[in-house]
Amino acid sequence: MSLAIFDLDNTLLNGDSDHAWGEFLVNKGIVDEAFYRRQNDHFYELYKQSKLDIMEYLAFALEPLTRFTLAELAALHAQFMAEYINPMRQPKADALLRRHREQGDFLLIITATNGFVTR
Image (tube, rainbow, N blue to C red; front, side, top):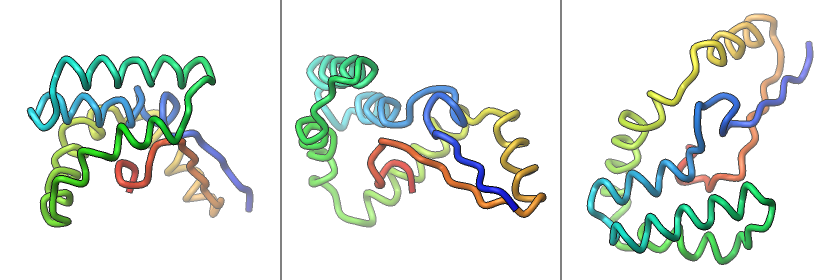
């Protein structure tokens, strides 16, 4: 039995789930398009450069969640998963995960994306 470690974004998924969540919020009209897209893109660039201030980013990214009930958030999350995350899944990655499971390996998927998006 082995431990198989994978990164979620740009490895198992074809793209970044955190950035996709921001695009989802913009496309649903939940946030101001110009401001949010500009900030979301800016934070993503900082992340790629290893210069992201995580607390500043989280204050930005999590603020829209405060406007909804838990039931509304669950519905938004389900829609996001169906419309954004499922299309980002890579068949080769799914097959690799399946193979490791069949071999009895422990799987560890890591991500810097907040737990609301990834659960």
